[in-house]
Image (cartoon, rainbow, N blue to C red):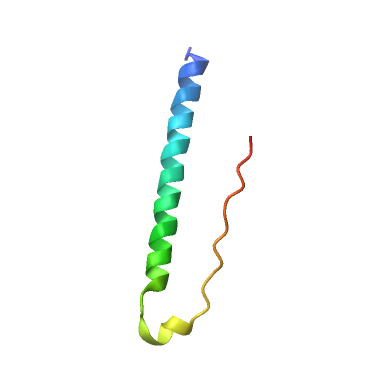
Length: 55
């Protein structure tokens, strides 16, 4: 049987990793949206929203 504290620690580390990946993707999306790509520049860009964290 796994120790619940070890499982919790592993899940918290995984959560931190996913949050870092999400931040990196947000930065990449902003950079890609800032590029001058010609006629597609005037295309409608989706609104980016923050994720609500639940306790």
